[in-house]
Length: 195
Image 1 (tube, rainbow, N blue to C red):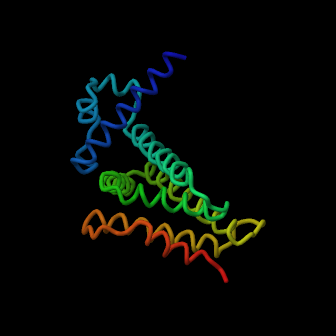
Image 2: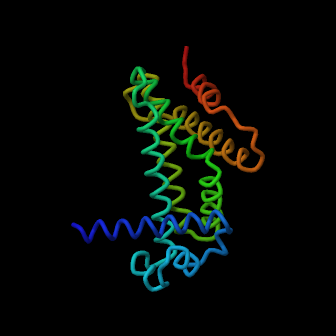
């Protein structure tokens, strides 16, 4: 058990090193050697934990998803909300908070650019995006009180939400105007409400 925790800790350390490299450079200039040096490992030591570049990026994408989930859980602790509002606000705020972080946005853009060159990475990104689409669409379905399967309208509104949040993050990274997060969430909440 102690050995497994040590391995997890070292992998996290390497992923954090990759993030720092992607904050400074574009993905095409970030080699395994660069990440190894940043992490204080030899290239062989890094390959012990992540044999391929793809495996390292997969771990980074998974850490992003886990961070979003942790942020979502932390958003509503102590808030007096009904179940539907709680689910919606945690979904929106957790992901929006993640996307408006400039470091995360730079890393995410690098990952997406890498995905244009590598089919394996693109497939991982597609799964990541689809998973988030399903979270949004499921939240919308629940708000409508619909017990059936997700429908095209749920997915459409979910995709629009993804577009708004992703591009809000990109635009705030490139040309910040300090978007008011609660106002953005309130705007998106209005899209979900059905009279």
